[in-house]
Amino acid sequence: MPAQTPIQRRALLSIALIAATGALSQPALAQPDSAWPTKTITLVVPFPAGGTTDTMARLAGQALGKELGQTVIIDNKPGAGGNIGAQAVARATPDGYTLLMGTVGTHAINPALYKKMPYNHVKDFAPISRVVAVPNVLVVHPSRPYKTVQELIAYAKANPDKVTYASSGNGTSIHLVAELFKTMTGVKMQHIPYKGSAPALADLMGGQTDIMFDNMPSSISFVKAGKLRPLAVTTATRSDQLPNVPALAEAGVPGFDAASWFGLLAPAGTPAAVIQRIDEALIKAMASTDLKSKIIEQGGIPVAETPAKFSAFIQSETVKWGKIVKESGASVD
Image 1 (cartoon, rainbow, N blue to C red):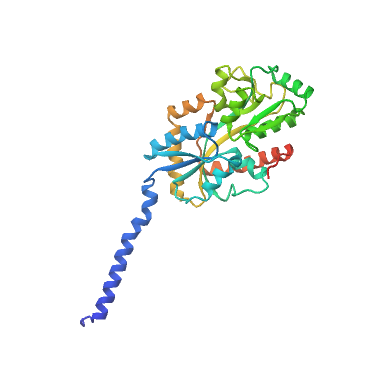
Image 2: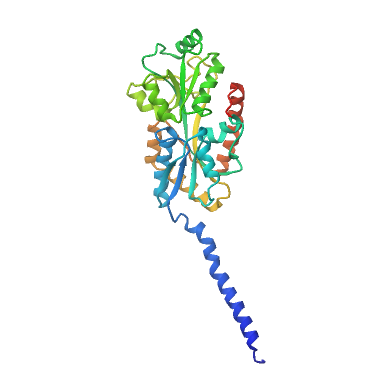
């Protein structure tokens, strides 16, 4: 074999170095998925602290943190019916370290309600799983004269626009459920929007407003303490947590059925392996009696499902609530 020239030796050495570098880089490229998570995860809540979204996010975040071996911190970014927080996650780096506790508002109602959306609720997100479904409960300040749904309807019809109903903001499920109630009963009531359930409940208990179709988890403790009077739940059947409270459908509004939900989403483009890791962790957490019992105690229904099933659910909810928004005539600029 003829001796190699210096140029040939340098060329062979370069090829060897390139091959070695490529071999070393392959595990490094695969590492983020296989080793994920390696740092703190942020779970964005698009509503203020103290409301149902926040409560459920903290329960889920704590359980997920245990399963994933990393801390999950809650970052409240309220405003615009949840759009501000959702937009922040849509624009976040798609690496699994920024997640959203999405709601029926951010991912079903708002696309039909707002004339201009700062994000596309389908294209800009990677659904992971629903976490909880919750009924809304029609609660009244104890001093008000109506003690049943029929009495409320009769009073509102006799006193148009004198009954005030609080909500967690324009276009939230709490607002839209009230709008559906108005449409189905023909009553006229005055809407008082707040920036979240907590301040709305504070004014309701203070007597500044009359009623609220609140998410059950944020109201149930006040109901049990006698600070709020429950008239009905908004699901088709009664809630196990308030078995003596009728469903609206049996209390004089036939066919009424509306519930809120909360679920985990990541920015679009998040690696499929990371999405699967989070979903598996949630399913494992939901299998424990600890998380399930805490959700049930709050009046919620625990849910854990595949990303594909959650995606299909969002599509069906978009159609359902889009129709409700159209029929109510509600709109936000």
